[in-house]
Length: 398
Image 1 (cartoon, rainbow, N blue to C red):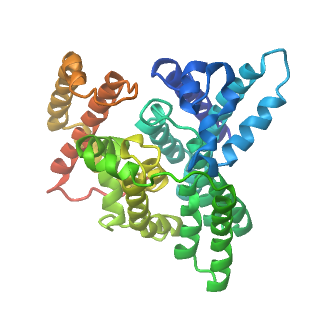
Image 2: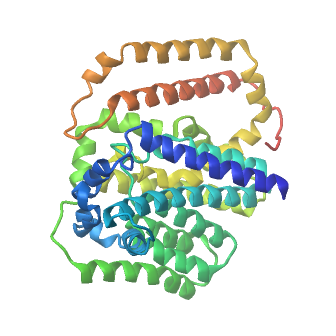
Image 3: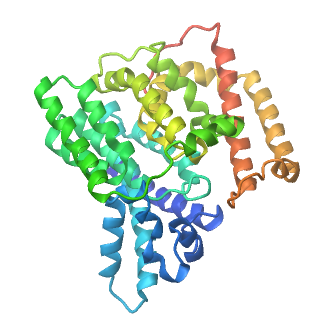
């Protein structure tokens, strides 16, 4: 218990540090009332207007505002209503990040029966660009962290076969954001219940979501806006796609393509079997109806990608150790470091070629992130070359 409580405390502290730093130093939308006002399309002096929530498709995402607005009205003290709203929005966003990290830790610990593995996987979650820069343009997160929390909880209770709780979470997910309809999709196609029960459990959140759209109505909007942007900016979309999961992409594809054996763990089998379909669903919907460089939509894949990566690292643990001690690794580190330093040195030149957005995207920050995670991805490719002609040195639990 002491170990689990220690990991829990560390996750809470790290989540708070990342959340605060992201908004304080990385131009996050929660760094000031003015920045949040731009995000919510409201005046900084009257944030609770939250104008964007009344526009399709945002008006269908009712759960997050339904939490923030009432809570802001019952906050005690002498602060102005606007200050209370900003404080509530800030604190609840941080609470949802902490909750997601803790829920993911417990999900991983349950699957791998190891708190250390759970902590390592949670670090991969917290240190990925879509979380580090969650509130920075172009990611500009709103209800998405709550969505990640519901996704992890939904998967956990699905694996535990607590279907009633899973159904409640699926309904909340549909009320939070339409992308959480991935939960009933998982239940319908990857659980072994009878077909009648599947239709009932799957149908309820879908019917609620469709009813919400029908009764709330709203002005028509262009659903193909994101698709056109992606097509017209393939280079940026491709680069940010790679950086979103950086060196974790190959392990994920290696596991879902069954190049890495999963064993008899039924939970891991669930992720391996559902992984290709979830990837296709998330990628296609993001490419057609979202903007890839916003990353928060693509990041719904994080449970599958991180869990599959852990399996890959576990099964190649000895080979990875040999690689990290090899001469080729240190040579590649030198090349990667040189590339990062060179890129930062010529930052102004590189940034000047990227300033094509009408929004205040902090390209200098993103350039550093791309260089660092690009360097890590480069080193991971070095491992593939190093390990290509070497036998696996055995499976060890990390």
